[in-house]
Image 1 (cartoon, rainbow, N blue to C red):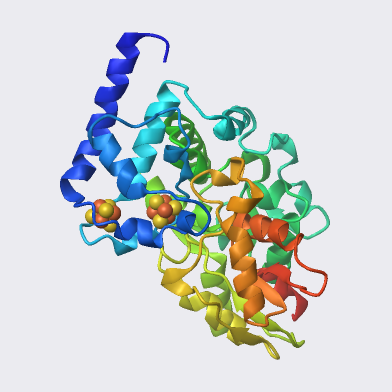
Image 2 (tube, rainbow, N blue to C red; image 1 turned 90 degrees about the horizontal axis):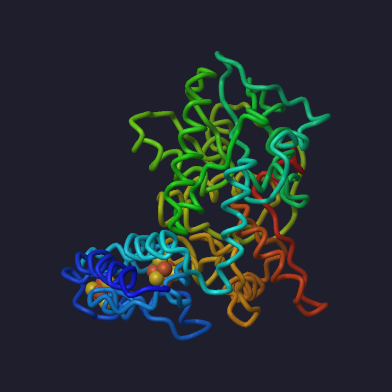
Length: 383
Ligand code: SF4
Ligand code: SF4
């Protein structure tokens, strides 16, 4: 903030963002009691709300960037405050004035990569479908049963490409007539929007929507809960509607229709982690469990915090791109919770969760063995 004039403007904008929230909030602190940050550091969303109401937010500080948008506080608030919306509006102000703490600076590079190549990983757009080579994956054309919207991490990340391959194998074995968009697919834009970069979100969303319309897309299956959330709940803001289905729902559908048959056994104890954007944000708790329970030999056990109380992995709200010191990672706590159940496998359905849990599992004691798997990878092993 170099001059007095923008400083005053910023204060007014903060007050405007905070004031509406503060009218509802009676500062009970129930949000802080459930916020995962308070398991690792001291952080108060209640204080963020109060400071914003008076225009006192330190827009260059870390506080406004902490929220992972996990949704725990929104669920608990007795006054129906949407703490996530307030957090994102404060980030929008910081983004407008380009003021970021050091831990958030990587997001600026990511924004450039999203605009230039349609992905946050600084990868070549033309290589988006390289993962599919040799796996009988067609390019989407009008009239196909579904569009498989792969997402950025599954398209490019060496570990997560295995999830895309497992998904394609399952769809092929079930005889689904599906295709992908390859280089024509862009990042869904969910996470960059939560960092306050509305312009980049709108650019990505309109690119995808135009591609869907031009290619006659009607039904979309997605792997990432973040893609699911934004395609299903946020793209309708552009006055369009596509049927969006998460792969867990689609697997449930395929099994019920008798299109998927398990020929092998998976003799392991498995616990399932509910990703925030599948569970709390979209109420999908039962389908993944139903699918896992149908796998022969698999024993499903629950962790201490499950379903609505699921402990966030720490990757939402754009945090996947920010620097989080090891001592502040909720994913370490979640991996411990999984081990406490005696599970050999921590299953989930989100690229951010897999990335964070795998990183946390690297520092386990040699006797503690925990595989991190997407549900599709487990199914692919028993088909
Ligand atoms: S739970 Fe709701 S009312 Fe209570 S402090 Fe948090 S935002 Fe305010
Ligand atoms: S959404 Fe989650 S991380 Fe953000 S303030 Fe609420 S409880 Fe904390």
